[in-house]
Amino acid sequence: MTRILRVLSALALAASPLTRAATPLVEDAALAAGIALAREGDFQGALLRLDEAVRRLETAEAPARELAQGYLYLGISYLELGQEMPALERFRAAVLRDPDLRLDPAEFSPQVIRFFEAARQEVAAMRAPAAAPPASPPKPTPAPTARERKGSGKKTSHLDASGARGQIVFDGALVTAGQGGRARANVAAGGRHRIEGVLVGAASRPGTWRFELPGIRPGSLQVAAGTVAVRTGNVVVFRLAGREGESIAFSFDTP
Image 1 (cartoon, rainbow, N blue to C red):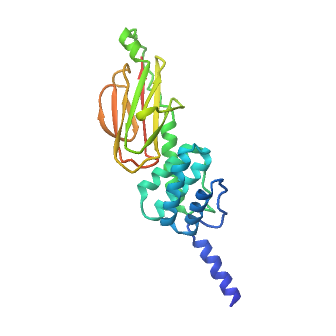
Image 2: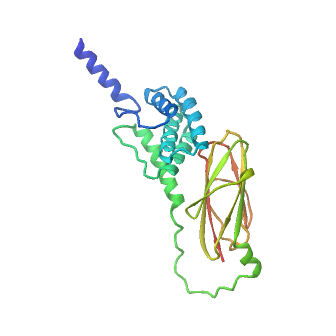
Image 3: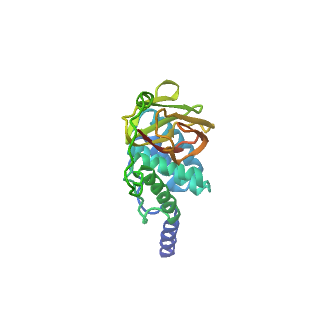
C-alpha cells in the first residue's frame, strides 16, 4: 500500500502545471505568498495576492527581477484560468523587466512556455532595430527648415488613463513621466528613433496615450505594437484597455 501511495504522489507532482522546482526566492513576503499559491494551483487566489503585491512594488520601485517574477506568475495564473490576452500582457511585462528571463521545461508546462516564448519574441521584435531599406542611388537631401530644426527637438506624450502610470523607453533610455502623465524628450536631429511604452500600476480602466512628434520626416511614422485610435503625420494616439503590462511601440525618422 505504501508503495502505491508513493507512486500516486509522484504522478500527481508530474501532472502539476508548475512541476518539481522550488518556489523562486523573492524578498517581498506578499509576492512570495502569491507565487506559492500559483504553484499550488490556486490561480484565483494567486491573482488577488500577486496583483496587489505587484502594484505596491511598482510604486516602491522594487528590483526589476523581483517584479518580473510577479508578472510571470500573474501571467501563468491568467493563462491557467483561460484568459490568454491578459496572460500575454503580463508575460510581456515580465520580459521587459528581465530580458534574460527564461523558463525551464522541467519546471513549467508546455502551454506556459509556448505563451511566454510568444511574448518574449514579441518584445524582442519591438526592441530590434528597423531593417535597413534596399540600397538605392543617393538622392540629395534638402537642408531642414528652421521650423523642422526647432521641431526635431522636443517630443511629448500624454497618458490619459485613470489610475495608470506609464514607462517610456526612448531609443533604449528610460524617460520618466511628470505630473499628469506627461513626458518630454529631446531628439537629436537626423536618424531613426524608437519609442516603447508599457502601462504599470494600471486600474483596468480604458484610456488613451497621445504622442506629439513635431518635425519628424513625413511618412516615416511606423507603429509596431498597440491599438491606434488616431494617426496623422506627426501625432499618434493609442487606445488603451488599461491593463497592467499593456504595451505600445512605434518608430520615426527625423531630418
